[in-house]
Length: 325
Image 1 (cartoon, rainbow, N blue to C red):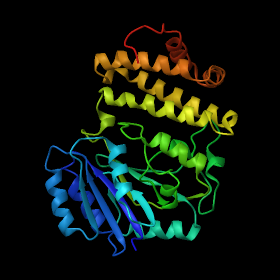
Image 2: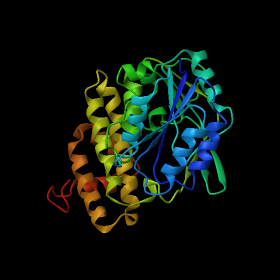
Image 3: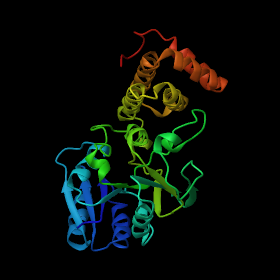
Image 4: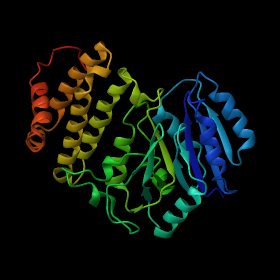
């Protein structure tokens, strides 16, 4: 019986993959499997993974013939996974030795659907600890109870799939797969669905994932049209939350977060290619018009003047202006 399946997508990360794989080796156990998904890399990553399949205990190598993005690669791994528990790692990040046995022990001790953990963010040589924005540690929690408040960072804003571990019953209930084809913000609909529909969770102060920021090939560093998938991701969050029995309570948080992300992208619009920047404005204006307008009014009233003014101006933009969504 496989106890833990670790799903690791790779795409053009030949510079970092050896460190990632070395850290997996330092976490290997006879009842662990490592599902290495190459998302049609064009560099030396496939050769590195083919070698790892032979040398890394528990390695399972899968290669996509067409690039599908992180969400699709993770879904491939979920479909291949045989473990009682599942977790994720990105192909340019790494782990502390012996981290996964500790993570597994944490979820088994709590007996919950999923556990969320802190992590270490690494930008060049700088290191900083980022914690799950929820204070109660080591206790059983009801996930939907910690979505709110709307005006503060909560667990749904800490949307890193690799910062946790998940019981297989979430796969069986259709809660662990990602929205296929999303190129960015793929963790957002996923984390909201987990918190709305899973029955139990825990938070533990376990550090062991090292998240590499500022990677040149990372989509967050590239201002192309794929970045605009955040709109499709948050449309899904709002639509699904609107169908929830507690929609009136939860929607203000979803809408306010969506507005904050739109404002963030508009505030750094110079990093986008000109055509993409125009499309960002047009699609964001359309997104604001699709939101529940009474909830949007409340969200804008609760935001600081600069962000609220930026979004109100965009909201007044004529529907046909610029590039259509």
